[in-house]
Every structure is written in C-alpha cells, then in structure tokens.
Image (cartoon, one colour):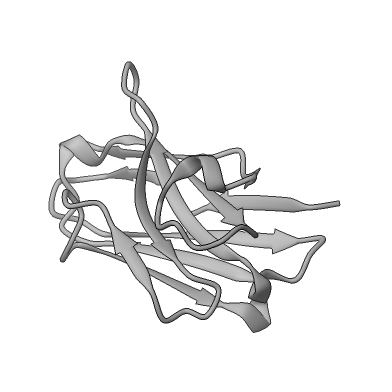
Length: 124
C-alpha cells in the first residue's frame, strides 16, 4: 500500500524554524520526483518546493526561496523540508507528494500520491 506520512508541523514564532518529514512506504522512493505543497484557509494549494528523482533539480516558490530547503534520503524513504525564518504567511497545511511522471517542477497535477498533511502555524 502506497503511503506518505508527514510529521514535524506545529506552532512556531515568526523567525523560527521547523523541519518537516515525509515517510514513504509501499514503493521505492528513489524512482519518484517529490514535492512539498501547502494550502492555507481560503487559498488555493501551491507548490512550495520540489525535487527531481535524481535529486539534482529543485524548484521553489518565490515566496520561500532562500528560506526553505527540500532534501531526500532514499535509503530512509524520507523527504524533508527545512523551513527557516518562518513568517505568519507560511501558516498552512503542508503536504508531501510524489510523481512518477516526467519532471514538471511543482505542477501539482503531476503528483499522484499525497499525504494527509501536517499543520504549520506561525504566530507570536
């Protein structure tokens, strides 16, 4: 059974950091592109950070460049999102997803397997 489980969300003050993890099971992560997406209340889902199956190509939303970093450990079947200098506008539910289609950055329609999400709240 293909499964993605996110963890690491929580409440953090502005300027703080969090590291999200996404544990994959039921398939071999190495062959898939991976991505982190988020959705805030009343807003559309947006791609935050994505990485190709090779780990060589990455794509980031402009709003998080220089603050967030995506990484993967295929041996542990885990994807990470390091988030630094968090801002209140980063508040959202964060989802990880995988794509077995051709690389298309963070185009969400290319990502077919999704986790249940983890809440990130940035507030003082």
